[in-house]
Length: 143
Ligand code: DQA
Image 1 (cartoon, rainbow, N blue to C red):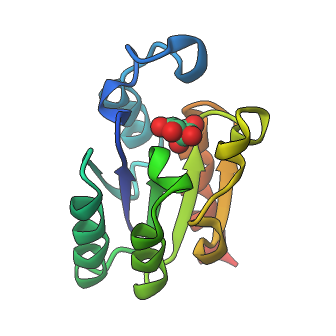
Image 2 (image 1 turned 180 degrees about the vertical axis):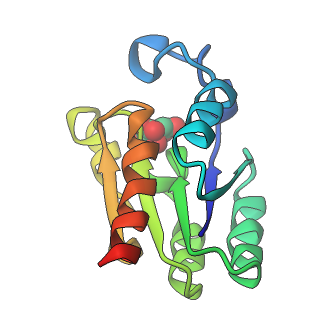
């Protein structure tokens, strides 16, 4: 099984950025935990602050035969029709994840352009949301 994690803008700063919201662990540290936990899964991760690069990566992922994509679109969640179109343009299932509980934050964060075309949404469980999203792909495969 092959899963790609795609992180959007400002998520390169995890561990440093607003730790009261996003925690104090860097994504690299957490990614090592994920690899340890899901040894049987080929995990890859990609981050970009650039909307078009995220779209390109989604398109490429489809050609690379990923079983699933775990996408944290960051603030593009609430603004990007182009990213939403990319999610709906590929066959690979996408689980949307947010570290924070976006529904417990500002009104603008209650809107997601992505959710409609996502296989599911995980929000509010901290970095462990990535674990839950990966587990959801494992569960689907074992159904
Ligand atoms: C986020 C929530 C977004 O509203 C925010 O812009 C982010 C991170 C999250 O993981 O909680 O950059 O996607």
